[in-house]
Length: 385
Ligand SMILES: Cc1ncc(COP(=O)(O)O)c(C=O)c1O
Image (cartoon, rainbow, N blue to C red; front, side):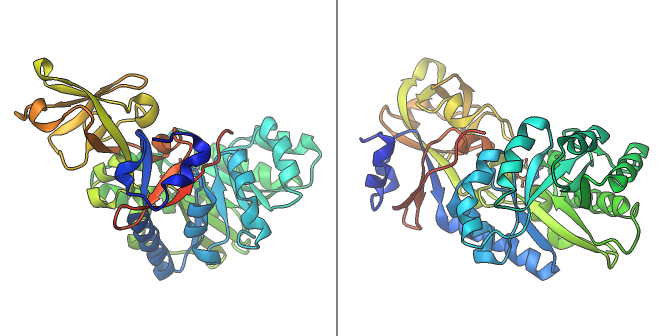
C-alpha cells in the first residue's frame, strides 16, 4: 500500500477497497445529488445562494456548489480558503463578493487588505468596536454584513435588540463601511430532530434579518442572508413578505456531504451521506465484545450527534465506534451480536462520521469514487488558516 501523499493519484481507477486505511472517501454521485437538490430549491424560490467552502475546502466542490457560474459568491471561514479560491476568481466564475465568515479582527484585516487587490471582500461586523477598528485602519470603505445571533450564541449581536439598533445607526453613520445587509447562521438548528423544528428555525432566521433590514430606510438595497444546512434542507418552506428593497440569499456548507448530525435532524437519510471513512480492524476482543479499528479521534473527531458514539459502521447497524483515542477506535454494541461473528482482524469497515466538516479536516487527500466505488479523482484540500 502506497501511503505517500504524492502518490495518491496511483489509486485512480482502482476500487475503493484497495485504498490505504484510514482514508476519506467521497461518493461523487451522492455529493452531486445533494448539491443539485439544494440548487433546485434555491432556483424554485428565486433567491440567491452563497455556498460555504469550509467543509471540503477544495476547488472541485466549490465549482460544483457554484453550479458552473450560476452562483457567483462564497463564504469562507479562513483566509487560506479565500486564497484557495483565487483560481475561480481568475476564471471569472467567482466575481461577486467573498464573505470572510468570522467577525473582523485586526489580524485578518491585514491579509484581507492584500486580497482585496484581486477580489471583492465582504466583512462580518457584530460590535461597534469593529467599526472603530475599520475606521482606524485607514483603509478604503469595507462592505459589511451585520451579523445577528438568532439563537446559536456563537457570533452575532442579539437579533431584535437595542444593541443591534445602536450598531446599525453607528455603521450607517460611518464612512468606513457600507452596510450590504444582515446575516444570521442558525447553527443551533443542528440540535433539531424534526422538520417542524427546522422550519421554526428558518422562520426565526428570516424574521430576524427582515426586522433588522427594517431599521434602515426602505429605499436602501439590502441583502439578507440566512441558512445552516438543516434550515437549508427545509428552505422550500420559506414564507415571508420580502420588501422590494431586500434580496434574500441562502448560505450553507455542509449540505453536499451530510453526516450523522444531519441524519439526526430527521431531514436527510443515511443514504444522503456522501462521506465515509475507510478503516481496518486491528484487534478483536471477545471477552469484552469489542473490536479495534485504526481510525481514532484524529480520523473521526470527537464530535457527537443524535446517535450514540463517534461513528456508525456501514452495513452493521448494531455497532458503533463507542470510544476513541488518538489513532484507536473501539467498536462496540448494545445488542446481542457477538464481535467474533462480525469482525476479523484485517477486515475493512466503512464508517459514517458525526460531522463531515471536522472529519474531512483531518485528511490530506479525499478519494472520490463513482457509482461502482471506483476511485475517479483525488482532491487535495486547502490546509491551515
Ligand atoms: C458563519 C457561517 N455561515 C455559514 C455556515 C455554513 O453552515 P452549514 O455548514 O451548517 O451549512 C457556517 C458553518 O459553520 C458558518 O459558520
